[in-house]
Amino acid sequence: MSQKIRVLIADDHAIIRQGLKQILSDTEDLEVVAEADGGVKALQVLRNTQCDVVLMDVSMPDRNGIDTLKLVKKEFPRLPVLILSMHPEEQYAVRALRAGAAGYLSKQGAPEQLVTAIRQVAAGKKYVSAAVAEELANAIGEDIERPPHEKLSDREYQTLCMISSGKTLTQIAEQLNLSVKTVSVYRARLLEKMKLRNNAELTHYGLKHGLVE
Image 1 (cartoon, rainbow, N blue to C red):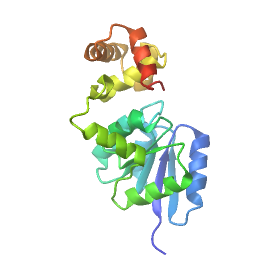
Image 2: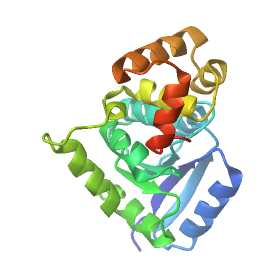
Image 3: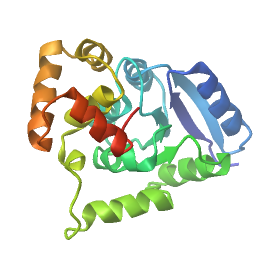
Image 4: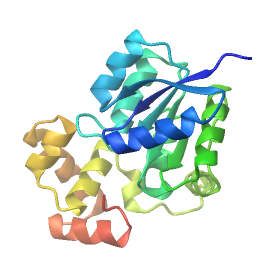
């Protein structure tokens, strides 16, 4: 029998990790070799454990998935990272793929989809669902006017989503491991870019475009 695909699961919810582990343990050619409950731990594990694919949640408390993804790709450029998220594809998929993800999956997807995705990225290919493919086509289409939030940097976008969800600048700073001053700068920049005046307008925009976490 050929060698199993070694998977690291990075998710801060123990129940989700257990569920994913169960799905993968029922599949002959896949093996969960390690788990991590956050981005920092995921990087520590990767430095000491041989993995073929990283399955990573996009929302983690210590360092979010997109940030961790960029760090993983810097240290392990050839290691495929499959981003798993409870957020709808249109919210983070294109950003994740631009940041170096090998694929993006919604947690609402079927178990078979997960297994197929892992096999595909382990073989050096990209994995995108039909919904993500449509988002990518829209992002590439030059004649399509992109909404203002798609023109924000990743940090500005994260700040927008968090403010829309009712988080304070202090809470955002803690979650992103940044100073409150830095988060204030991101807030000021995104208000300027989006031609909005205050948090109430940001929140209204976030709700209207489904960006609330």
